[in-house]
Length: 245
Image (cartoon, rainbow, N blue to C red; front, side, top):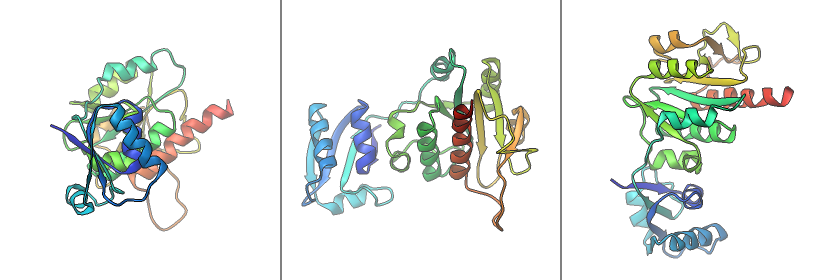
């Protein structure tokens, strides 16, 4: 099954990373743009077909209507095996892995991938059920990060957290009831950040598998951030700690 990638940055990053693109469609009459010119050149170099179509056709195929006049057809997205991510981290003193506990919103999923990649994470792990699949919306929200950051799908999150513990990771769960705050929690070294769905948070078994729970302090009247915002703060706090050592 093929996948759709839409949006200039997402398509450009997919092509730059060598992701298999079989076809590229560009809106007719679009103004010349250096990024679009690069996309067309990369697609042709990769042997992908390039066609110019009415914008209305792209609108029909777009999941959210934010294609920016550029839509690519890619091979089905392939998730990375867990052992590959663990291998990337094996010889490191510091490594970040983000685990999502049944996050179903594709926009949030993509935003988490983007933040994790920018912060230098080694991978993102999701459950194979009740989780958003990698779709055009995810690619767009990730702004191309899906082409650079390994994404793992597992059948059992608690078992996976156990394997990561055995590999030397500390497991930190994001929870507004956490004893440790973002500023004082040991968010350093080899760390797994676990974030739950916005509706129900961390599931009980996943929360019990964490070494500690961390809360993000709030000063306003809204009690919490969405999962993508929380992931960004936590991931960048982990990154900041490296600069302080």
